[in-house]
Amino acid sequence: MSRSKEETLSIRTSKEIKLLLKAAAEKEHRSQASMIEILILDYAKSNGLSTIIASDNTK
Image (cartoon, rainbow, N blue to C red; front, side, top):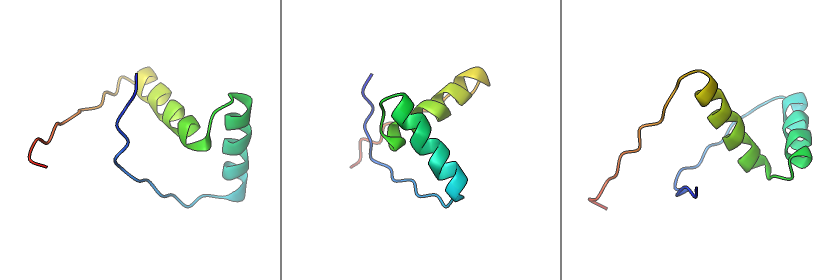
């Protein structure tokens, strides 16, 4: 399922976390951004969280 990507997320993190993200993404043959999305979606699913998608037709 393709999602519209209209939002930007910037984070500051430690070198260790950045290296772990890089290693995980390489292992899964994904970009680091895609890996972050997968990790967040997996967390949400396993913890009963859901996203609310609001459509703004006024743009």
